[in-house]
Image (cartoon, rainbow, N blue to C red; front, side, top):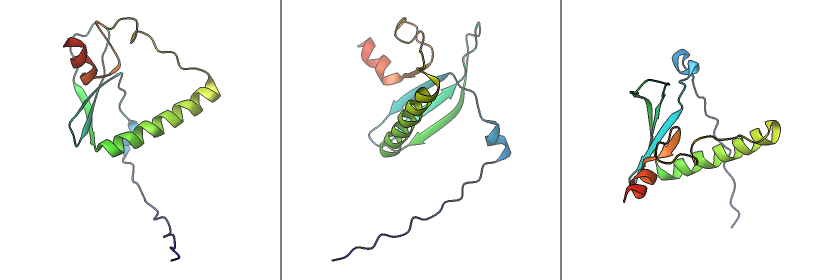
Length: 111
């Protein structure tokens, strides 16, 4: 049996003016259920004890894995072109993390 490949469908994606400006976030909190991965993005400012979620992304675990692979690929390309990205604070001070973290990681540390 000879299977023919279907041509890949082109997808037009519109980027609105507001969305094109983007949102700066330096904190991401991740939680999950068996069917969803939820990522909340926030911005933490020095000497400001309070922050709020600026954007929430909800996706399936499969799409989160695809996002993970795409981020990994792009970060590897970035580092190949510009050098290693250094991270600060995350592994040095686990008691008061600032930046991108998983809430589930924190929950398991507290048990």
